[in-house]
Length: 296
Figure (spheres, rainbow, N blue to C red):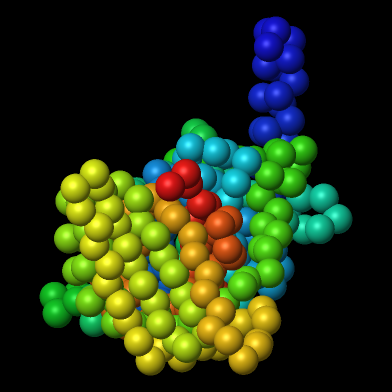
């Protein structure tokens, strides 16, 4: 890029920054903990996250680090359910704002959200010589009327021309979907299986059986879960239908090792030979995690 092009880009970003406004406040303790939980999940799965802000929704999006053309995490929050105050002025007719930030800093700044004395959680876009997402946490204090913790997280504004990269992913029709068994149990088993091989085969069938399998040159190990609730199946026939996919065991382990998952109902979806899709679907938010098939 030439010096002239850099100058034009700088002026464009500066103009966009000056026009954009965002300010939100969460006061409900349950919503603050939920928001923190979602960020913690993403912090286990990626290095940076894209926040997409609209008038009604807040999106947290992570791209696949090995293939930036694919979205690995797609989470949508209903701002009316989470925020007491929510004001924004975005770009273009869609009135949206896109920016990226380091997820570890985001998670660290929200760590007080798990404390019982947290009163409010505020977020706003600020200009501290460069664009920042400023987090303000107000806590009750025994020595003063309030205690305020402020964190400035540097962000990178994403220009409208790049917004299509963060469109909602097209999800193929699932062959089968079940409610996962105890996350603690699955996590423990998968962590043991990591020592055997790098690929995890996940199989689901219409009877509600989940089989997790791993193998190497000298051994094959399978773990069977039965009696799971089947919430959807592509073809319902009299015979047992079984669908499988093979994924990177380290990546599914990273997802399962999020402590906050212990309190959520996880849905597991399989697209035969193509995709493992895990989702958390609550009234206030949804979170989707996508793992593509790898060569067996």
